[in-house]
Amino acid sequence: MGGKTKCDYTGCENSGEVTSRLSPEGYLVATGKKAYSFREAYRRFHYCIDHHDELMSGVWTRVRKPDDKEDGHVAPTAI
Image 1 (cartoon, rainbow, N blue to C red):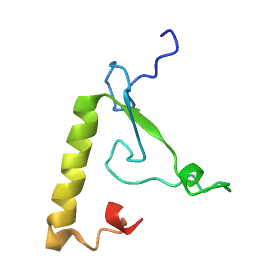
Image 2: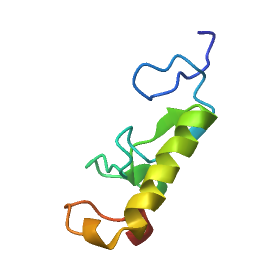
Image 3: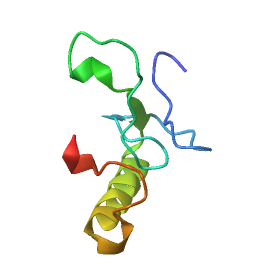
């Protein structure tokens, strides 16, 4: 691949141009490892622009729904 990172979205072969802490399921993911800074405390994913936009759209749709607040996941704005 010549040093380029592939998109982490399942089945996508595009280049992962956007670095994100959103998992392919659309949730922020902590690694659980000791980290030296807040930035290192979360696993990073890489997405093509289309899949990153799709995941972000899903996050904001979920955050705006009042009936979806007890699903056990922290809202991305709480971090």
